[in-house]
Image (cartoon, one colour):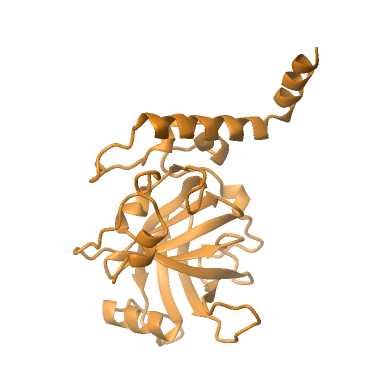
Length: 251
């Protein structure tokens, strides 16, 4: 069942993430979300078949064709996750801060090039390429542009779950040698950094351009939990403040 794994991993009475819902309308958007969870990584998502097909990219996407970025395929996400930016509270799956790092549209490319160039493809070709493990597509985002390939790694290493792919930039006019993902930081929706999102209690709710279908999650106990999380993260980022508090306690 679509989105069953997404639903199984989350407690929606506690997390501000949107509930599972399969979209009937077809779309071709993509989003990259920078996620400061147990390990900092980037979540790369393509709108396809009524969901967001998703991969966790530890080092982030690159516009340098020389970079072959490891991308771990994860559970499909609902399309409403497209503009989720905020804080997932502690003791929840994926707890941490989420930033919308890039958004835009994507276009499937035909699997076989013509005169050395890949032409626009169809939905059927995209589905077949994904199933085969060699998906070619073109991005038109605010930060990422040009042709890419998502290629599944078929060599099974010890401990492998079989979900390893490689995200690779194709050679074109949009490639940047020595691309540094950190040089293009900041939310494309709110211009905030991860630290600013983490310390903003208002962003702990689902930040969306559309109304949330499940209503507000402003329960008092959740607001308290979020406030504690914000304070803890603020203290962790301000060690000087903690040392001052300790000195006062010793007096």
